[in-house]
Amino acid sequence: MLRQARRRAGLTQRELSIRARMKQPLIARIESGAVDPRQETIERLLEACGFDVELVPRLGIGIDRSVMTELIKLSPVQRLEQAAAEAEVLAVFESKSR
Image (cartoon, rainbow, N blue to C red; front, side, top):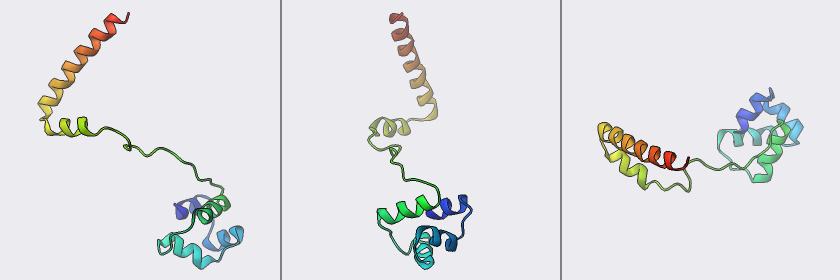
């Protein structure tokens, strides 16, 4: 993530080290995965690149996967048949809500 942000900002590791007031070898170790930086460190480096840390929901987390697991067990034809049956049910609900 840091390497991508640095490159998008058009910075070398040395330029980033000057902006963030950190040693260049530390930046190299973070980018290579040799060091797991503290949150404050990564925020400081990303800010020096013109980026910010943003919390976003992770896709697929908190989803009931049991329905997907059951659908995967069906053949393609069975999935199409089930989709058609569900479309009919939705059509009935839609017509009743008008």
